[in-house]
Amino acid sequence: MSDETSVEPGFGVYWWHHLGAAVVVPEGQLDAVTYSRLRAAMMKVAVDEPRAVIVDVDGLSVDRTSALALFPAVGTELSTWPGLPLLLVASEETSMRMLAEYRMPRFLPVLHSIDAAVATIGSPPPRQVARIALPNGYACLRLARAFVRRCCYRWRLFDDRTVDAIWIANELVENTVKHTFGPANLRVELRDNRLTVAVYDDNPTLPWLIEHADDRIVHGLSVVECLSRVWGSSPTPGGGKVVWAVL
Image (cartoon, rainbow, N blue to C red):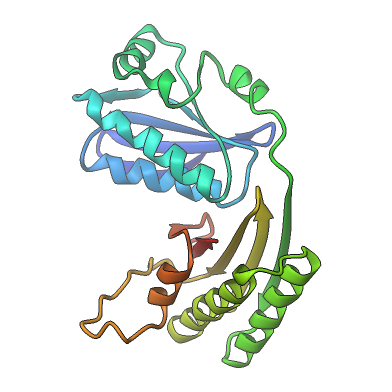
């Protein structure tokens, strides 16, 4: 079943799931306006952790091939978090020529059908995942810290990442308590020796880092930026968001 994720005059993005993969179908011209719409759609469907994200580009057109840089950029983001491959499908001659002009196969797999793309996914890397639903309120900060500590102990992570992950979880959950009225959902994952902390809430407003003139002020997302390899946020299909950090 297809879900319409966004519509601009002359541009739309649709998705559905096929054999465990999320299939995204953009239709219309990719330009400075629709670029962000398509990126948001790809990141949004990835939040549900499908086996892969597959984009069928047969309905897509560009006035400049440089706009296709969107796909390698999103592919890099998805490989970092939530750890998914991005594949492109082009069966029309025009689409194949468009991708060839950009030399897309150097950056991402390009297949001729959705089934062929699914067949190349293979098995995802082993991952250990733990989740907890937290009540809204400052009492949940202690629960979040204890949960991350238990996960790291269970996964035999005895290095500095444990302390950093606890601190990051505390800051992300505290942001949820401050800025939303709903509960936070905390997710901790270990994959390819990368530890990830992610917090989901029902507020669609994506966070941004506030720069302070006083470098001694370190709290909130400043802590997350300092302690993580990379962090980011994405909208969720349910209308909320997830903020994540990779250590």
